[in-house]
Image: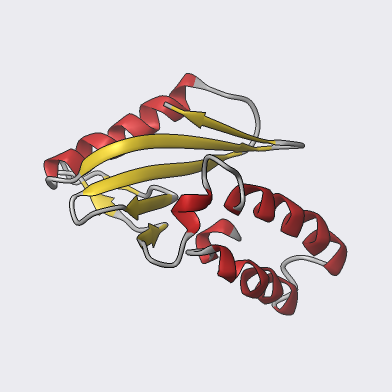
Length: 132
């Protein structure tokens, strides 16, 4: 939920503060979560997708031709019709996660959006970035 509030790396402090102020997390949890979020937005494979000059859609519904509603965690447009899909996960890797990203790509393809990369970010004790 915190990552849904972050479009750029400059949003980290505000997002964490917002969760503290609304009593969703404690200050102790905030310290740990801040470290994790900073690992994501500053990760060498990810940091370019958290820059201020990009068009970003976090947690936006997409409706397929069949009427199915999908909600990718993050779509980053690098040009008007080229995008990166990023999805955050906890727990273990699962082939369903890859299939989920493929379904996002298929719907976006129908909208004439070319997907350059699909990235899964597994957030556990360590942050694991997997390009699929």
